[in-house]
Image 1: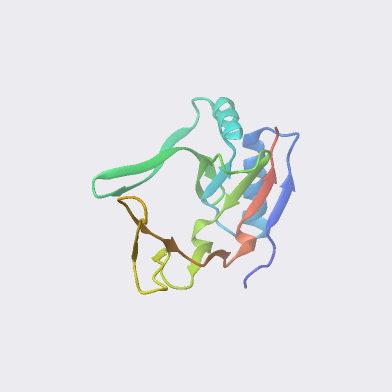
Image 2: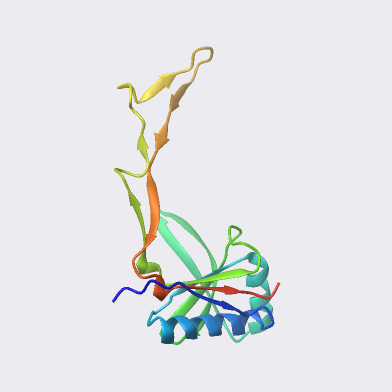
Length: 158
């Protein structure tokens, strides 16, 4: 059964840790999800680090491509259905945190994403007044969720 509810709760009077525990409980018990990632603004991430102090494990969400490691630090908390990686993200709106089950999210695209624009048959364009070339890329994509009830949003203390 795919649920059509994206869980939302208000925890502005709680600590960040309590807000994460509350949205995890809501998603696990009411939505039957198994969240694995919590995205929050950097200020909430810093406040969580102060709250939990040394009683938490710090991990890395990293991938390695061709010998180069890309990644960032995470705070790992024990959730009801497994480890939850908390990530501070500058793109999160202030005062909101997102509890996500990442395997329910997909980037769907018409064709390759991105792909070179070759509408006139040319992949590269030569600069008219300088010694350069231009390549244009585009894609038509949308981020979708197969199970909205397995995810949630919480209003955090500011």
